[in-house]
Image 1: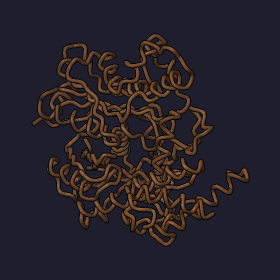
Image 2 (image 1 turned 180 degrees about the vertical axis):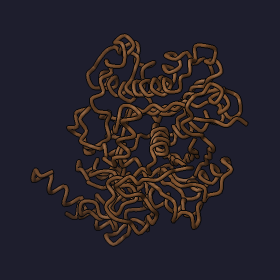
Image 3 (image 1 turned 135 degrees about the vertical axis):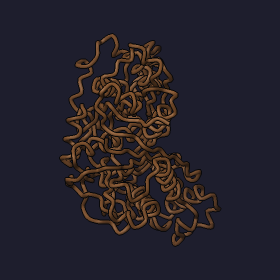
Length: 402
Length: 90
């Protein structure tokens, strides 16, 4: 089995449109949640979100290409460019065929779908643009990464709602670990802000009207976010041989299914994913310093996840730092696992523990150290990052400081 | 108001898949096994039937002063929202 390291990180999300700006945003504890402004909010009950503001696609892409790029593809490409440039890998020099591109997304081209349905159903259009389908398809972000960088090995998109990116990174990790691929470009992307999609989320009755306050007393639910994060993975052997800077090492992946309710989380499923992850990493629970929690800010998730952490970590749960950076970058759904892994690795490298923003006061059902409101100085050696999706898909990743 | 009460009870009974006669003001929704997705489907059904917006958040036991514990709570909340809408406040 190969050891698998991260040699590139790219981010395009609400707290920052590159990894350095994003890391500064996470460290600041300043929530990037604000009034929805990238689409008209008239007629919406949910009027807040974590948007990638001042994002000018023309600054990144030629207009001819943009006709094929949904907003979710744009985010993925921006993050992939940054990650691949940092890694220093050139996939066109023979490595491409031995490289995988595995990307997570919850829904894919929602903006394209929404705009085109509006045209045919709402505005009586007789025809749609010929690129409608290739632009909206959920695999498009992954395809465009392979095309832009000459990656000709296996590539596909993983869709498991809010666990998509953790599953994608987990699969990519296993592909490099097993030797099936020498390197992988992996992560997740989501661009959720369309009128139709937000109306759908409103109907679930889980959206917070004020802000996202994970694990806090008086939390009122989740807040949507958008963006992408991409990692470059490769064997440790290759990274060392070429003198690349190793940013972190992925050491474990665990996944389970609740096989229960379509929306309600379950303690056993969440605990099972974390336990499987630790087992694969070959580490004892007390080796973990930090948990980047799924922490959506709903009453159900945060209480369930807290119980699951107690179940897996026992007495060590009281010594762990646990935080939900969703309070800062919003719930980015199919991109969440990747954005949160980026936050975790960047914090590991920056010598701080990410805070849970918007925290008011402890909740009796949530009794761990959630690093309220302010980042804490401290060295994370080993962290796990959780994603627990609608549909009961649970996925945890373990990462170690390089 | 009696008509509205029986109409609300009919919606609740349909969602709970029981006879309307089994639902009284005192009946607790939890006893009708209206959980998770059922309760938000009930909110949706009431909004559609009465053309109102019910500010219900599954994360709060008491959303915007509306309790959804008993059928009577639901009837009162719907009556209030229908009134508000008639008087132009909604």
